Image (cartoon, rainbow, N blue to C red; front, top):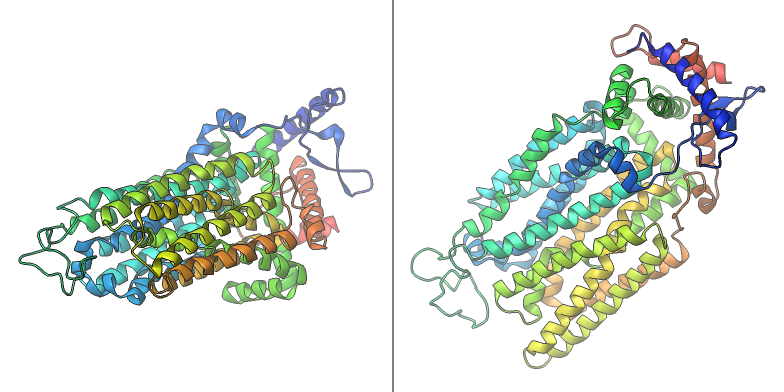
Length: 614
């Protein structure tokens, strides 16, 4: 491939010249190729542009369904996260699980640690995977994460002791944290620009599908062996199962498969993801980062379903290479010869010392904070417990209500897909904040009234359930997906990966805190739990109103206006210069970056390139 690069690029030049004459009389939108003007600066040449009409998501997918298939397949990592979120809520309420692990079942603090161990280790995994992903590659780091997940799931499924099942939670959490970091990155790097934003929402949709599947598997498996341990024996307290007092003759009638099966079923999508990733393409961007340029071109051709001689392949390859060279040059300018953990530390310190970068990180992390402290995962993790408090005393009924919650959660996400690029992020966030606040206050009022009088009336209980569902709708179209979309839009290229790693770790840490404190709050302050979350919904509304910028329809450079700097403009200017240099040298067959193992250091090639540019 390297030998015939020059003829291919010369062919590109001829095609551009031919297309330009047609473009002069066409009003169709154009996709520009960077060119140099007579003064040596860069410009977007109207006479050197490829005529590419703006295409819809449907058009892009119809033209190349392979890339959608790869993205959907890799989003199984999000499904694993969503599945665990949903499945644990039903498992901790099953009587056979309580008979095996009575302390987890009865002690709200211990139950919080059981749920949150997964989340704490996921936070660590999301931070750890940055170095692994850059060294091993996106697809191989996903395979490693799947192997770790299989180990953790196996420990949970076969759990016979508290230490064993806690270890399983920790190991599985580590792997899911790794996946939530690398899957969106891999999807973004293989996706055409036209559908990249939609695929970010696809990740959230995959999470909600995982939650939905888990809720209904919990509901079905709860009937394995019966819904009670000792159905012929009334509860000692007359209300609920207590594994310390409600012990009958013989073993628990509800089979341990009731909770082992939901745990074990996670192995199937994990195995699909792990095995399938061996056949998925490498990220072309990562290959260029590792100096494997010829493989990068091959991977790009495979993903785009175009030939190596296609002008669009060559243009995209030049753009990827320019971005990589830009990042390398920026690292050398700011951090010198630092590498490894020293480089990581300096990069993070630079983000927090720059006012504009810090503001972007603050907004992205705050959005993630409100996403958790508005109560979403408290309801997901402990939905059956909450529904039981609302009068659905039968565990089967509370699991059924939880399953319906999962359906609403999944369907409401499609509202975001339809509206996020039409009415904007801010309107959806503010509407969602007000809707969730009203819902939580209503539930708090009903629970608070009946908490001080007679047991909750059945109609009042179902009204509370309806308000929980209304909360679900409002959160699912707003803060759930936009909490992931917004951080991916506000960072300039130079700090995007680090900025997103900070916001991702923020959501995991907040998730951990919510998972830990929610059981105790539901047990001690009952209706006050809903008021607590409603207050944060109100804060989220005003935070969005006064602080969060609108990113709909804005380019990366336009985002600078919201943060009062020119970082993205300067980044783009430098990338354009590099792209122009690469194009000119490639057209003259004078540039060649060596593959790994070459005797010519990459830094020397970069130095020559930037000496020419300057």
